[in-house]
Length: 120
Image 1 (cartoon, rainbow, N blue to C red):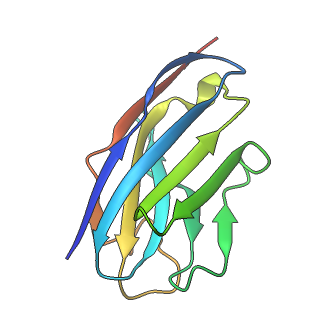
Image 2: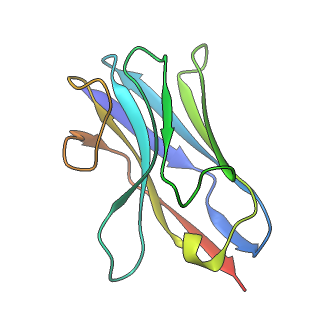
């Protein structure tokens, strides 16, 4: 079992920053951030491999978002800078205990989500 609890969402103006947190516990897993905007499918944002050696980003967030983890606190972070209105979505952290890198289809555990709203 893996438990995931997100926090840190909110309302911010375009160009601003937010940091999301995800407290993770349970089995060693590949971990990732995903988001879902109204009327759209859930999409990949960033992920870290199961061994912690590699980090991956969607093209739409490269250079603006940074995924990090604090192993001592079992917490993931998504630092989001230069936010755009199109970043508005519910953000989820997710885990896959089996694959090297979690995907939206493979994720077996999901947090409850946190809303990020970017105003123009």
